[in-house]
Amino acid sequence: MNTRTLRLTPDAKGLARAAELLTQSALVSFPTETVYGLGADARDGTAVARIYEAKGRPSFNPLIVHIADVSQALDYVRWNNLASKLADAFWPGPLTLVLPLKQDHGLSSLVTAGLDTVALRVPAHPTARSLLKAFGGPVAAPSANPSGKISPTSADHVVAGLEGRIEAVVDDGPCSVGVESTIIGISGAATAVLLRSGGVPREAIESVLGSPLSDPQSAAVTAPGQLASHYAPGASVRLNASQALNDEVMLGFGAVPCDLNLSPDADLQEAAAHLFEYLHRLDALGRPIAVSPVPDHGLGSAINDRLRRAAAPR
Ligand code: TXA
Ligand code: MG
Image (cartoon, rainbow, N blue to C red; front, top):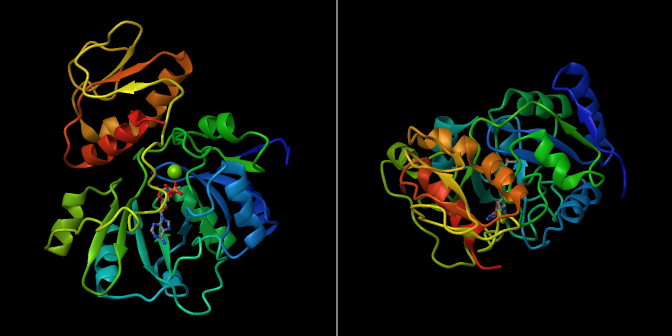
């Protein structure tokens, strides 16, 4: 495909056009509080296939289905008490629940990459919510970046990565959380497994559950798309650096000399919101990147997870 990517406004007119495009098997990127998603009708195999094609994403890596509210979840999955507890506490918001599919769920099997579970999320961003309401159906949406590259937290990032490969992007400025949703697998009524750290800190989830989250038992159980190298800038990334060496540019955290600072006050929320924007900016310089250590608690766990993948050998 080679179409110009339309920029739509986040008002009623723009969202009506976005919803109409979704009914026509088109790909529409939209903002969520975490990152920009690349949306398609999750029941439409043709549209979902185009997501994989546009991103260059391996088809064994399933997608998250975005819905408007809990009642919509009941159309697709077998719900249970644990899911209720987490949804009550964190939906709408940056939490994704992986649950067993119902029979006759009507979702494209490409969305789930043939698994018998599906990942569901109710986003909090008002524009995402309005779009889901205007469209009225489930929207499959991975992050709107070429597979393996830095995630998009602005419409400019989306266009820079996918121009000509998607029909439209709803431009509503930068994302407030800045790292992807936390993914929790709920296999039975009793166990919740942390599949990906993200916008809801592990500690917050454990405090609602009143018990520790389990870690995945094998790499295969982990979200299948959690490849070691991901979020990768063109240049190399060196972690836990105290200063830039040679030709490096420095991405700092806290009171350190650097080229860009995730949060001079060492605030993890601010750092998460800046992470991908700053990686995009430093990547554009084409020089190796050195990164300060970031504390490994709260949102810091998600930040460190993304940084480790950005630094992994390719
Ligand atoms: O914040 C987010 O979650 C963003 C916004 C757009 O909502 N979306 C996002 O999607 O990060 P994506 O495709 O980049 O990451 C989805 C992750 C993948 O690692 C995938 O393997 C995992 O979710 N996943 C999807 N369905 C799954 C399933 N049935 N079981 C286990 N993991 C699943
Ligand atoms: Mg992604």
